[in-house]
Length: 403
Image 1: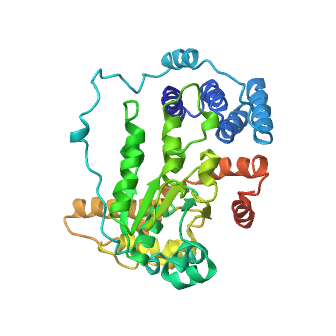
Image 2: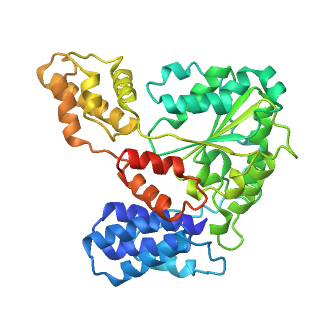
C-alpha cells in the first residue's frame, strides 16, 4: 500500500532526525489518517517534550485521545497523494516500479515445512506464566484427546502471542511444535504479500493447503498485524483487504477443514489486527509475552555465551542488573562483549576469554529497547481498552510500574 510505504519512509526519517519536531508531527498526521492513533499519540508526546507549547501537537494529541476512546470515524478521508508529494520533498522514495510483469507461477519459490522442532518448553528459561497459559489453552487438550471428547471441545482455532519485540514469541512457537511433535511451518510477510493482483490471496490458500498436507503442523504467522491489519483503517480499494478476507476464509472452521493444523500467530501490535481475526474459531486465544523475568534473563545469557570462551561470568548478577531488557537486548550485550574481547585478543595476539569487565562495558553502551513499545501500549490500555481485551497487559504494566 502506498500509504504504508509513505509512513515507513517518514518513520525512518524521524529515526534519523528525532529532534525534528515538524517532521515528527507530519508523521503523526499520517498515522492519524491511517487510524493508527496509539502510535500517533506517542509522536505527539515526544514533540511536546521538545516544545510544550506547540499548538499543532496539542491539537493532534486531543484528536488521538478522542479517537481512541470512541468508535472509528469511517467517513474521514485523507489526501494521500498530496501527503506523498510533501514527503518526497524530505526523503528519497523507497520504492521504484521496476516495470516487470507478473511472475511465472510455476517458478515461484516453494515454502519449506520444517520437521518438528527440537526445542521444548523446558528449554525456555523462566516465563512460567506463559508456559502455564500455553499448557491450559493449547497443549493440554492436544495431549489428552480423550478429555477433549469427554468435554466436547476441540483444539481448533488459533493462538495469538503478543508483546514487545525481541521477547521470544517465535522461540515459543517452535517449542509448541517440539512439545506436540508437529511439523513447523513459519510464514513471514514476504511469503504472503505479492505485487500482483490476486497473487497474495492465492499465496494464503496455498500456505494452508501445504499445512494441511503436512499435518500435524504448527502453522506460524509472524507479524500478524501486517498480514491481517484492520480493514477499517484501509483506504479506498486496498488490495490488502482481500488478504485479510482470505485469512478469514482459511481459518473459518465452517468452510475449511484444518484438522491437525495448529495456527499460531505473533504480533507486536495486536491493536492493529482486524477484529474479525480475533473472533471464535480464529485467533481466539491470546497470550501476552512480556519481558523476560530474572530466571529467563540468566538463561538467555548462558545460551548466548555457551559456545564462546568465557571466564568468571555470573549470569545471575547480569540478570539482576538487566530488569527491563528484552531477550534481543541481552543477546546484543553478549555479542558486544564478545566483540570487545575479540578486539583485545587481536591487539595482544592471544585469545582472551570474555570476562565480566567486557559484559560491564557492553552494558554501559546498551539501553533497554522496549520503552517505545510500552509508550504505545500505555496509550492503548488507557484509551482503547473498553472491552477489557488488554486487561492482562494493564496488570503487567502496573506490576512493572510502566503506568
